[in-house]
Length: 319
Ligand code: BTN
Image 1 (cartoon, helix red, strand yellow):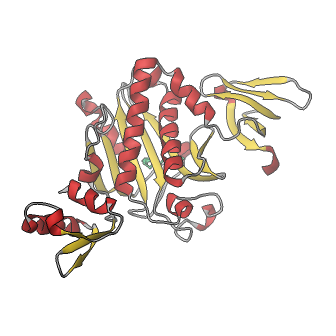
Image 2 (image 1 turned 120 degrees about the vertical axis):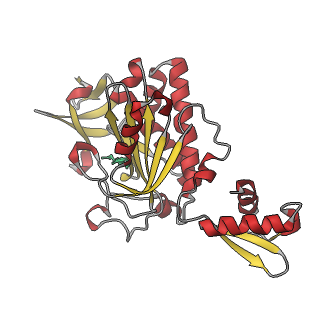
Image 3 (image 1 turned 60 degrees about the horizontal axis):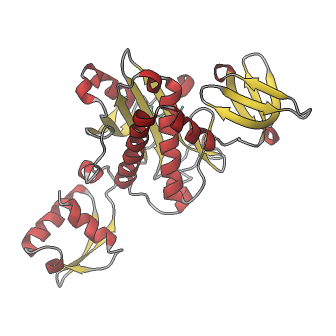
């Protein structure tokens, strides 16, 4: 597929461009446009030989995602499925070969999508980014906490960049904007591999959100009031994941840990922390994926809760 042609038209911002400006051979340009149109990209053709971009394809385009992706590990291989049970399962099935490190499996629709704590994850077909990254991490990068942070930080940053809004991470892995969930991360480990599964709401209108989550969820389309080019979004997200992965390989896990802490939703706020047996109240002074958190109580005492004890963190006013 002629992706440079697609991007040239897209970047013209809806203006008509004459065929002879789009290539030396107008017949070839016409043919390449036919191929792009057949895939689902939208154009308006003018009878006197010019064309304007009108919108992305509704399905993910592997050629567009891979175009000048230039990542080192994550996205070295990608696969796009129309329908599958769970992309995490497909990525895990590829773990038999280390040559598949960095494989990213996308699906337009999941019939058995999983969330954390045994929940399901469902999204209308073509509405979201449903994807899983296969890694063979070593040492501290193999810890679930680090893998969760990798997904959460990259997703929070891509959401902020695309929406112009602050995206925060709610312990341990929800990405939220204005306290509404826009994405979740599910890390699953194999003997020497790990799958980082990401579900990110992109082209979902408020009406398309299930009744029971409408007040607690959002999407990029809702935040920007415009349809999202999901292939471009996927490309951006893969680059961010890869850059964070590479930085951690070079510098160790702690750099990502502090990026995660800085994006934590409740930092500095009054919260209730639920553990298996108790609840603690106070202002959240610090939070760390490995060390847990530190609260300052109303008596100005410091209370520490280790990461494995935390079950939930709730803003105090919501309780
Ligand atoms: C959560 O917030 O509970 C985590 C949700 C993770 C959903 C994604 S969608 C792609 C991947 N495949 C799955 O079955 N789950 C993850």
